[in-house]
Length: 493
Image (tube, rainbow, N blue to C red):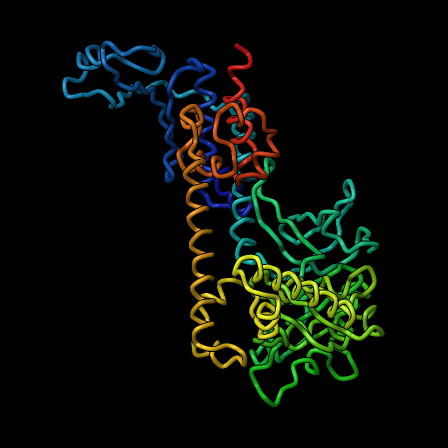
């Protein structure tokens, strides 16, 4: 029998390309299962198979517990006094063992062993897939469509199967069994049936990797891809830069007679690709990203991370694109919020903002309209700027003298101080009540955050819905639900 075990372990290990140790562990697990069927399912049994001879030994094990231990398990535990009657040196927590007669590796045991081995081999294969493909996550891989399941495509990757979800397919792309396609290995993760490879045909990474394959200048580092944005199957934008002054990054990506970009377009089923030059200057990058539309002027707002882009009326539809496609892709590519305006719209917006700033200066600084207009015309847009712009710069403005500048700065700082005091007073008034602090699952930081939002008592928390609480403060829905239920507990008393 011992030789048969060795032959079995060697044969399965070779056939399934798994470690021989995995097979021995499966054999031991199957022998434990067979032994428990004979002696008792509650028994703690261990089986050891000799890796060289194939001989195995079966042992029953007990964990030593104190004499007064509660919830004593007779099948797998032994009291200290009884254990010491056999071994005086044993202590609580030690394991006492006794050898049992080995079970015969008969038909039933063999069937059990087969089931355990098959499961262990599957687990080992899944682990190997994870190890092999985890290092390739983010790469482009090719596969053959094996079958379609509920709209998803199952792709044969050679040694493993992967899934291309319906939502990761290019819209209106006809994928049929037998087709060979290129995909982006988006994620490798474990699911209840084992590790699974998740693929994508819509990710921007696929576009970037395809260009990296087609353009040698990208592979050798002369050109760098800085980002991409896609409307899968319709249009995409790719930002590139050159590290070699003599190399045109756009021309290199387009290729002779457009052959390089056309290869990528064909792979993406006709998806039009705009290749633009990346710039470290955000405004220039946005102008490039809006290509082929021409920009008249641009206004950058660092505070809101947005830009107002002014174009001529005849360029408006081109800048926006069909269904807002061009401006949306440009915004995704650059990371800036882009507002497309005509000259008239930009002028109206500036006049509206100037009027708002002018009124703010008049109300908060107590100055007349002429002085407020002067400040706005000189580019002042907030009380903070009036308070902290250097005196020398303000004195350069025609119509302002040192006395007036000093007074304006004093008033501006008084306004800011009063606002800060009012804010502190508001925070002080928004202390959480004791019942909110004492609520199970509540911590002091969250309680004070809720209080700053006007939720100061457990009763006011109880009146919220889960989605309202999640929107108010950034917490998980499960925790929000638990807190609200605790707060509502008095309603059911």
